Amino acid sequence: MLDKIQEVIDEISVTKVISKEDLENFRLKYISRKGVLNDLFEQFKAVANEQKRAVGQELNKLKNITEQRFKEFSDALENASEENTGLGLDLTLPVVPNFSGTVHPLTLTRQRVLEVFARMGFNHEDGPEVETDWYNFTALNFPENHPAREMQDTFFVEKKAVQKDDVLLRTHTSNVQVRLMERKKPPIRSIMIGRVYRNEAISARAHCQFHQIEGLYVDKNVSFKDLKDTLYHFAKEMFGKDTKIRLRPSYFPFTEPSAEIDVSCFICGGKGCNICKHSGWVEIAGSGMVDPNVLANSGIDPEEYTGFAFGMGVERITMLRYGINDLRLFFENDVRFLRQFEGA
Ligand code: DAH
Image (cartoon, rainbow, N blue to C red; front, side):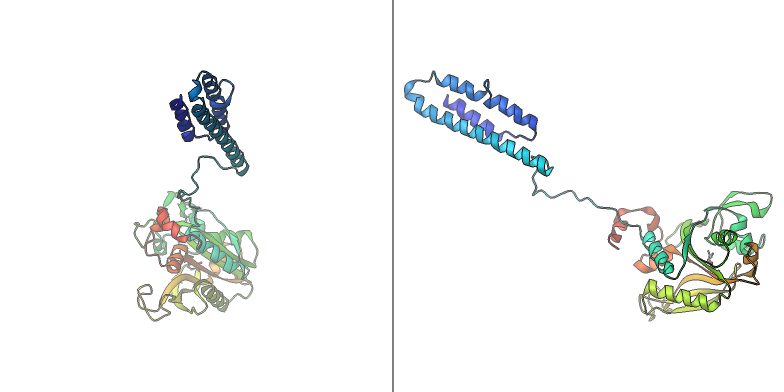
């Protein structure tokens, strides 16, 4: 009988209870009227007198252990339900890392740009990605069949009888300028950000889809100086207060005069490095005074109003900000890349 008692003690010591159901089974098996304990006490009656003392001691020990275990189990279950944790948990085990998502670096740039321009009174406007030739090219002063259209290799959706009706994927965000001016009377001060498409081979430096930021300011007496001041302020906010800007003459069909905007290289401070190709300057935007033809095409009187516009690549700005050297990374969604922007 001593063996039997020891067996039960061993069994109880390895028993696990992790639910109310387990606890009830434990009670039924060991403590209830038909349980193991009662059964052993029954058998105890038949134990020979000279063994009664030794067996009785062991039996009482078993009884205490059983009752103590029962109490421990029911207390633990109660606490667990209060704290809403499971039992049978080893709180010292290392946890499986649970990463929260990160904001995409392009979104970080987009947010920052919108914030900087919002403080200068620019609102945020949107326009369609599937566009007609009129808004993407013709209204922006690209003459029909003019070679300037080839500056932007286009994905066509549908060719129509008349070129300006062709349906295409917009090659730049400048289409929204026209739509905006059609819809609103000046003063207009807006930033437009969105995806654009070009039929280009994918490489570290080019992609068939990317994002642009477009700015437009139309009012009475808007001058080239306003353009310069606005972009200078933007450059300082975006790349640091010591940033300088430089304007180089350029050509865009929709602006006259046009200028390319460079900022002093914020990596080397203008001394010359790989990023700025040892020139001390990096190009960030195209810009200019809105061509009077574009104002007229959009229903705004060029005699009364003038405006400036600019356009830049979100990927380019983001690559410069974070020292990223491959455009493809933005679209592959490799978490090893994206996680580096945690908390950025
Ligand atoms: N749309 C031009 C491009 O995709 C960028 C640009 C240049 C936009 C000058 C403008 C601008 O608004 O004034 O290359």
